Image 1: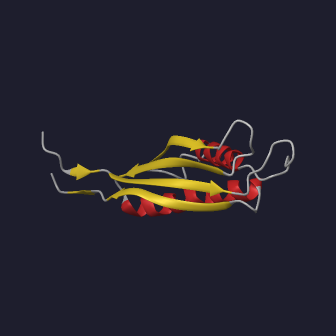
Image 2: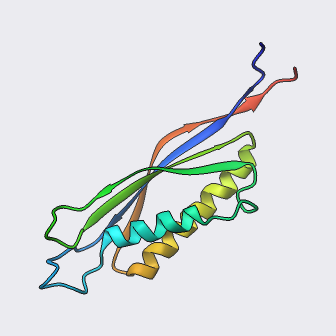
Length: 127
């Protein structure tokens, strides 16, 4: 077998931070885990037509400080893979917009940051 193409992959961590608080004393505090939940749900509903040629997978989720607090911090990792580098750039931006919208829908006081965990280029050669 001769391998003549390599799949590009991009792995990104999305982090959402806010003030946190006490569930009873601060019931209206912005909840970072709620924002992550909305973002993950939006990615799960991301239409196949929009991500044509790119797989988008949420691979890990974490956050919260304790059982008795409104979470101030939550994060999740996304893995994108494709043979088309142009599609990777387009879909990466669309995923970021989905996450930003989820953050805004939860609370404008929450902050979004990202960390690139890996960005491997793809390519191919004629057989």
